Length: 112
Image 1 (cartoon, rainbow, N blue to C red):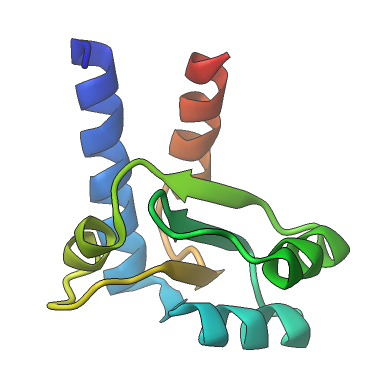
Image 2 (cartoon, one colour; image 1 turned 45 degrees about the vertical axis):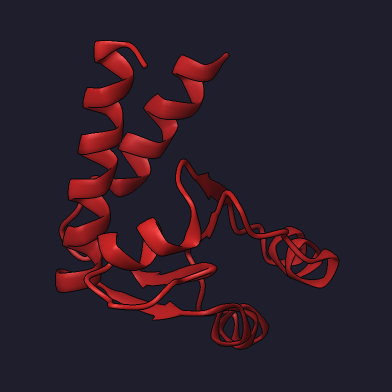
């Protein structure tokens, strides 16, 4: 992993922790689907080791909600969120005062 990738991942982790603490998120695939059906979702993040279900993809497409694959597994995603358990996916309802979307956009542009 290059130094820029490490910085990018650490910045993503920091912003994700900020949104969990200052914003509003729901954890888990079931809760994410409920938020998408209500139309409350701003962003969906799922762990790299968890398959993204077709209905979750469809709900995101219908609502125009971006999906981001987290660079680590569900255990790491749970730890990043400050939880002692694995988190397959999470849904951001309110970003609070974070730059999470900017960080995710820069990560996408770096991948291309």
